[in-house]
Image (cartoon, rainbow, N blue to C red; front, side, top):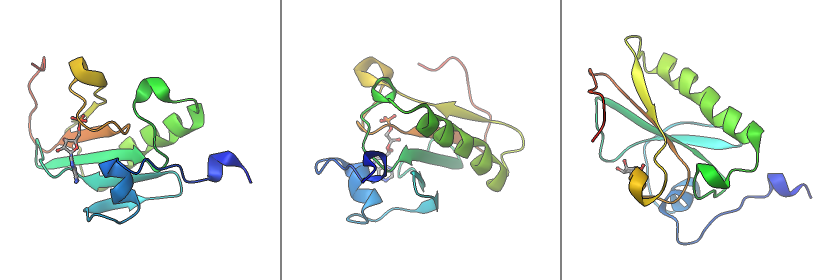
Length: 120
Ligand code: AMP
């Protein structure tokens, strides 16, 4: 079997449990490689997380450029479907200093209000 097609989950990962429907979430869209869910603690009127279905801890662990491409292609699709016509922010937090709290790679898409810059 092609290992890239085999689901790889981390039993202790909350996002893996969401992907496996062991805990509920508000799913925006999904396909064979990724899923997008609404953040439980939204930082704007729209706050969506895009995650790969196979467990990858963070962006430094990604070995598959096609997977990264698929995840980032979702950003534009979601911005369009959520009507974020005035712009939005795309964030990938990594590690402790980056503010990553869930060790399963995810892209934040935050919009629906004017966002400040720089972040704290
Ligand atoms: P980060 O701090 O970049 O790792 O982002 C993790 C995000 O996951 C935070 O914005 C949390 O609010 C969000 N989050 C944590 N648990 C859940 C959950 N069960 N469903 C949806 N979003 C979650």
